[in-house]
Amino acid sequence: MINLSKDELFRILSNSRRRYIIYYLHEAGDEMSLKQLAARIAAVENGTSVEDVTDEERQRVYISLYQTHLPKLEEAGIVSYDDEERIVALTDEIANEGFFWMQTEDDSRSWATYYAALGVIGWLAILARAVAVPVFAMLPWFAIAVLISTALLALVGAQYVTESSGDDASNSFETLIE
Image (cartoon, rainbow, N blue to C red; front, side, top):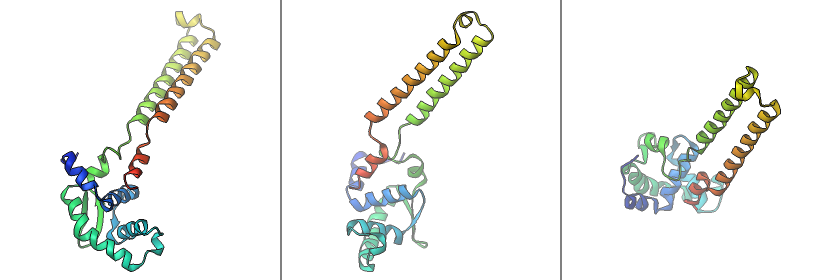
């Protein structure tokens, strides 16, 4: 992760234009021209669409980004800016790791692991019953089906409760620019 203190990070993020730069680059998932970036930010600031932004509105934002905001973000290691091509991108480190609000918790991976484990356990129980492993041979097929489906239902319920009680990372990221 980039080496910024909390104070430095919050100082950088205290300006809405810098937050918009990070947001739009993150949303695009790729580099953007400075002109495109300025037009998007001007549209938000003027309450209009990108197509309806005037040259004057875009130019005001463009100059501000070029002279003030991009140098600060570049110095902090958050964006890279190609002065010749006028292209802005999140640095590889930020694009790959993000900030705390960009990172989704690895819930999707852990839930997938739980579902995979349950699937393996279910197939092992079925196989054990089919080859007449002593404990499983006494269980009727119906009992195995009930146990596996109950475990699946409990897992789905746990995932639902966990995810509905937590904040969505993308929503919390969007609240930083509002």
